[in-house]
Image (cartoon, rainbow, N blue to C red; front, side, top):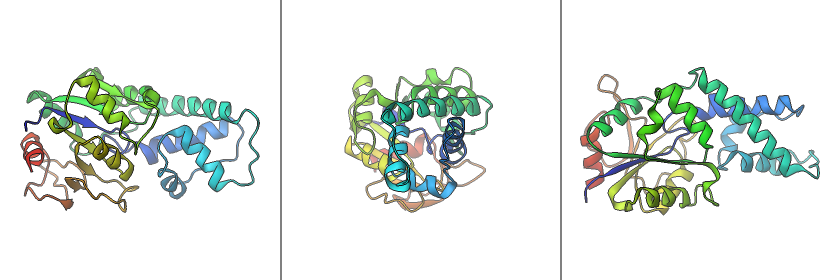
Length: 252
């Protein structure tokens, strides 16, 4: 088996977008619409068990707001709120307010230099991906990725494997030729369901998730000057991730 490509989740994996990006954007959309819905940090952590912003709002009403009476056009309201939330998120990202996680930019640059192919598989909307890459990774960086599989492009979101299967099909790759990068249990279930070996980097919201089946679980990708921490999985005895590490992990 030869490692040919890397497939990346976005939210929580490339950048810590959830707590300081999506959550305040949701809250601003709610406020603009005159709703008394407020998602604090702790509540949002619970809501992240559901993938997809529209699905998350519906889950919130069903499980946390029994007092709320749904209007007849509730689905339209949710869709409109999601569009407004995306506008607020992209404005925040366009200000450069959501930095990449440790090691991400370096690993992407090293992977490109080594001839590895890159793809994205995420449940967030394509607009969110584009603005994050352009303003937090750099101008033109969306072109680094052969495919950006995002949002509602497949009917079933993570933990279903559909989004990874879509990316693999578009890139003409077998799962055995790739590594996936994830940060959550739902994401891992999705990548494993598509037959992908997976590297997990946890964040504050996913520390207690079940990562059974991951090839390795790390605090982050690390830097030569700032070691990461291995939490579980294969020990390759290296304190940061680079292309040699990824190739060894793929073979393990």
